[in-house]
Length: 128
Image (cartoon, rainbow, N blue to C red; front, side, top):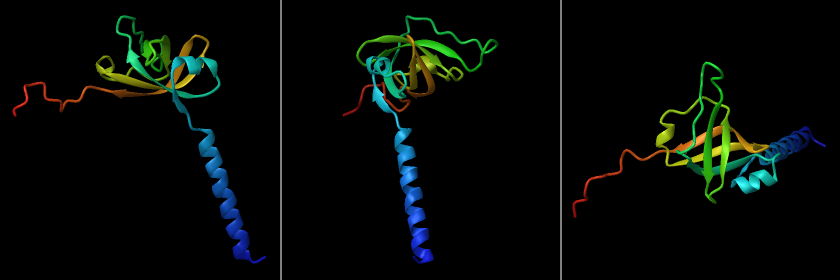
């Protein structure tokens, strides 16, 4: 075999390896029911903040732990432990996407994405 062929085979093998690693680390959108059924798998859970339940964040005790309750799109409410500081304007969010896994009865999130109300929405009457 020529050196060029060997280098080409190595590049193809590395590319296949990278593809398999990236596919293994992907997570899917789900609700709490599916996350409970597969606690070892990472999910994106979409829902809304339950504003009737308390939010616990004390940076003096642990700056990287924020507890709150999320209601998923099927109406199931679960306690969430976010392993980050409390996001700014958290209470104003319209929709929340959590990325994490179930641990017992709590959802432990490593990351959070929030959809906040748009500042560009015109609340005044539209002119026709």
